[in-house]
Length: 171
Image (cartoon, rainbow, N blue to C red; front, side):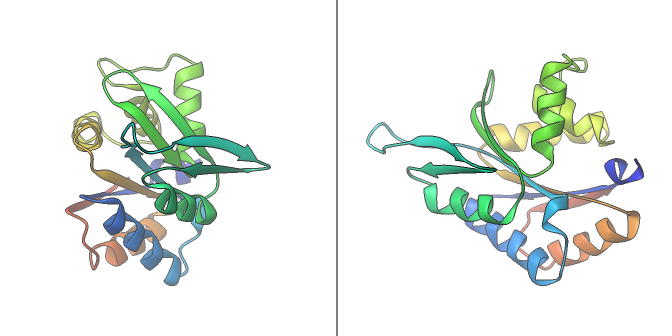
């Protein structure tokens, strides 16, 4: 299970920048099954917003529908959560399973949210988790790449050439 304890986390100011980061990882051959994204779901009352599942893919329409639809086409697993303190959160990738595991197992670690508990469960230190939770609450997007030490180091090199406001490897 060493793959779960090697992670690279990058923080982006916007969904456009996060999507560009994911596309750079894809172009470089990074396995999309090892990539997750988390972001708040902003929408206005004027926007029609909906979610539905078709097979293994979630469909979305609304203000950021094109963004999330494109991301869900690339990454495996998607979910919509209503988390106290965060509001509506959209998650795509393997982090969905870890988040569900944290919620089902009530593995919420000392003051961390369910998202924080999921990040902590894959080996991200608590102080970093708190920083990532704060970024999500502020409307930023985080990308989590996991894999072997070499894979996450390579992902960080790729991400460092994108518009990430920060990135770090956690082993």
